[in-house]
Length: 129
Image (tube, rainbow, N blue to C red; front, top):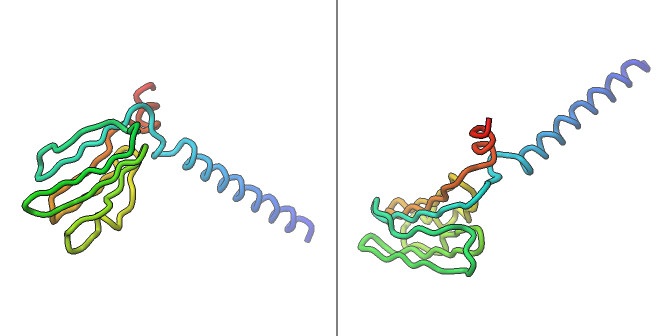
């Protein structure tokens, strides 16, 4: 009976170490950790509308009005959020903010795409090797 308890403790310890290691990896050195400047590209109807670098020194609101509809973006520091849109489904509004490379907000009915470009830490590490 003693051996079973020792074995249980060893297995639980191993599972805990793996869990803690995975949590640390994905929060500290995971895919969403960026390095260097991040560039935001806003496209409307497949044409570049605006381009800027994150983080922004001063918060700003961007209003996009076309024949297809109206979208309002808010840029605060290092993240972007679709504040409002007159499209029917509102998926772009409910998506929430984006702040890391390769994240996008897309409003299909109004043909508005907001994309963050940049290198993640893993991409930088792979290039360095």
